[in-house]
Amino acid sequence: MSNNGNTLLAIIAGSAIGAALGILYAPDKGEVTRKRIADKANETKESLTENAIQLKHRVADTIASEKETLDTRVESLVSDVSYKTEDIISTLEKKLSELKAKNKKLQKSS
Image (cartoon, rainbow, N blue to C red; front, top):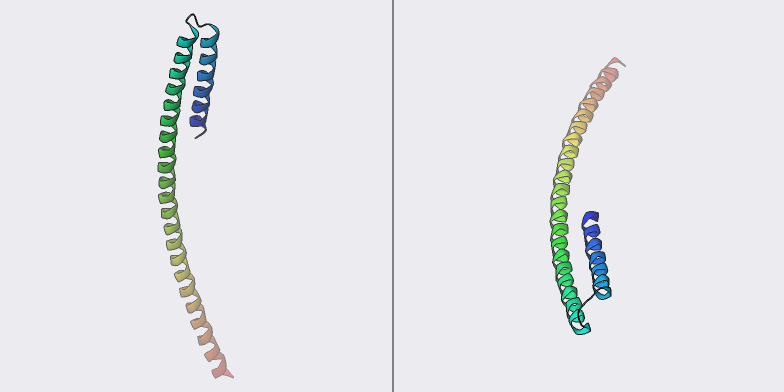
């Protein structure tokens, strides 16, 4: 994600530097130079728009992938908890049964 931001920043900076150098060292008439700058600005705008669209799609794909991964992890966690809950309930039922049996023996002894 930050790599895309760095690329975008490099494109913008490169375009600005290129335009400034082009103006300073332009051997052509002002009209021709302005047209070249306008053309370069349009190219840069189109490039930025295309990069922004690609970045948007990558982010959307990453979010969708992470959501699927999260859903899978939650499902697995719920399954594990359910299994462990059943195990705890079974253990408690066995202990209760043992305590009832001991209680009956104690009541018979008394």
